[in-house]
Length: 53
View 1 (cartoon, rainbow, N blue to C red):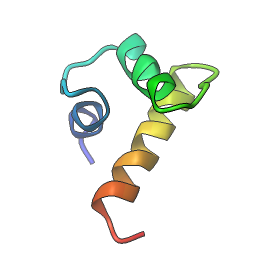
View 2: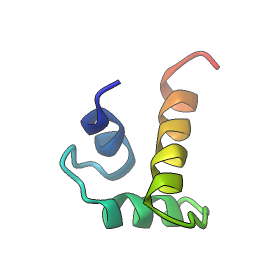
View 3: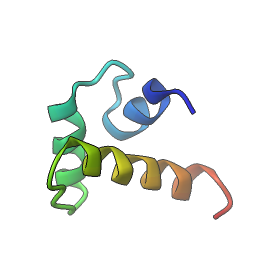
View 4: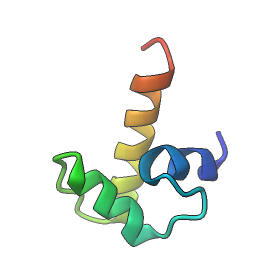
């Protein structure tokens, strides 16, 4: 899965920065400890909304 796809799904921009992804996950009610956790949450949101999981 290309990173840009996950970033676009999370923030609306495929070239979003780390802080953008963190902010997007906070806006969804999460409290990511760092950008790695925010990326994992963004991937989870993408999977739940686009895949049959």
